[in-house]
Length: 257
Image (cartoon, rainbow, N blue to C red):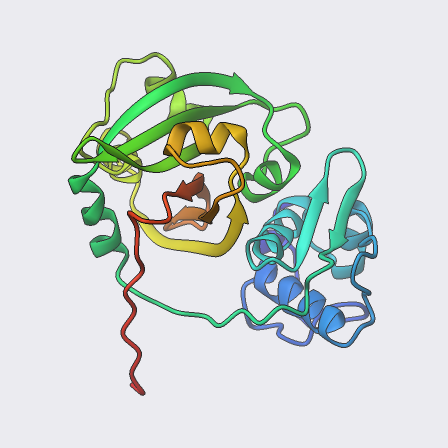
């Protein structure tokens, strides 16, 4: 039975988080966050199984997976295929939260020319599967792209889409050159993306990334994991982007509003 249909599903009970009036996945996420912050769930430690969390919080598996996906996006949890979810070893890293205009961010992609290198349908990694609420072995669409600015590579990306949304791109019937893929999804499928969440970090370029970005192996590059959500809270696109270090800058204005 869906969570919303369960009598008293928002009532506080044994094992249920205190934030009972918040969305269910958010309440579970916040409770797990608190346990991680308090050290009750130790860094590197294995989290309870999805089934155990469902029983603990009296919620559905899709609710637990959304909560785990939010924790993974925040860098607090990592999922390992066939082994479950673990508290990240670097869960103590400072992660300030910044907000901005999703529309302006997507419009900026119009300056880039995007080339699709590969199109595949395959089961995604555990973190992608959890974020999209997919079952084990369920396939998703993967597009690997390079975006150029004035002929020079700026980004190298792995783009994951649920198959119903990604099928037109897998078939090669729709070519997206000067448009953010997220906007193409909206245009083609009538989906409205209302939220984009992203985590940014620095990494050393591996051979594949170096080749596509035109840098030396080991060069420090910017990496970003970005997830777009529709109005119903469903993840409609997950993008792992690597940026050329000299061709991309974040400009952020902070105020006290």
